[in-house]
Amino acid sequence: MQLEYKVEGIFLPQLGLWLDPWAPVEAAWLSHAHSDHAREVHGWVAGTAETLSLYRERWPDSAGRQAAQRAGFGEPFEWRGAKLTAFPAGHILGAAQLLIEFQGERLVYTGDIKLRPPMCGRTTVPVPCDHLIIESTFGLPVFHFLGREEAAERIISFARECLEARVTPAFLGYPLGRGQEIAHVLCQAGIPTAVHGAIARYIPYYEAAGYGFPNWMPYEPGRLDGRALVVVPGMRNVLEASGKTRIALVSGWAMFDCARTRSGAEELIPYSDHGDFDELLQLVSATGARQIDVVHGYTEPFAGLLRERGLDARARGRTATVATAEEAEG
Image (tube, rainbow, N blue to C red; front, side, top):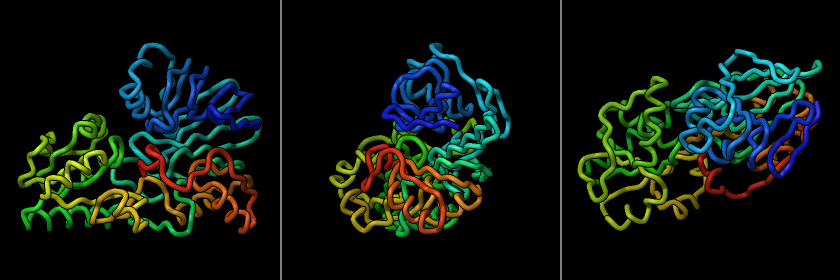
C-alpha cells in the first residue's frame, strides 16, 4: 500500500485518503477530535460518531459543508476498493484506530493511543496488521504512568486533603479529554466540583456517552470556598495570585520534576491519555506488524529502540522533545 508523508498529513494516493490532515483535503479520516488531528473543513470525513460530533463543535464551519461517514467500532465500510474498520484507541472520547485492508495488505493507523483502560472512553483493542503507523508522544523509557484506579485515588486523596485543610484543590486540565476525566472522578467521589467553561463545554458529549458528572457546577471567578476546581492551564496565574489554592497536574508530563516549575503545580500525578513507553512496546508486539512507521513525539528515539529489538521501524513526521500546546493534551 502506497503511503506519502506530507506537510499536510499522511496520504494514501491509491485511495485518495488523508489521515488526520492539517489542511483542507478531499477526503479525510479523523482519528479523534483534538485540534492537532481534527481540523479544517474537508470534502468528506470519516470518524466515530463521538469524534464527528466533537469535531463539528470545535469546527462549526464544517457543519453541512461536507459528506461524512460515521464509523462504528468493528463495523467495516468500503472506500474506493478498500475495507476500512475503526477500533478503539483509548485516548479520548471517540478516539479510534483505523484498519485499512487493501490488495491483501492490512495497514493500521493508531492516531493517539493508549493500551491501559482510560477513565472515560473505550479500552484499546490491538489490531493484527502487516504495517503499523503508531504515535510516540511518550516513546522514551523514562515514561511510566499510573493506571486509572491509582490515578483516581491520587486525585481524590489530594482533593480531600486540601478541602479538609480549608484550601482549594485546583486541577489543571485541557479543554477536551483530561479535563472531563478529572471532573468525572471528582464528581463520582461526591466531591463538590466547579468546572471551567472551556472544559464544561464538552461535558454533555461525555454524559451522552454514559459518563456521569453529578452535581458539578460552573466555575465562578473568585469563588473558592468548599469545592475542587477543574480549570484550564491558563488559569495558573489567577490561582497563584489568590493564595488560597494548591495546584495539581494530571499529565504524562508530570513524570518530569521540571513540571512543577512549568505548570505551577505542587502535586504531580503521572497519568496520561497517551500510552507510556511500555504500553507502546506492548502494542507494537500485539499487532505483529512487520513494518512500523513512528509518528508524533519522540519518533527517532522510539524507532531506534524498535530497531534494536530487530523490528523494521522508521521515524516519520515531526519530532518533539518538548510538548507543544496540543501535544500537552497528554
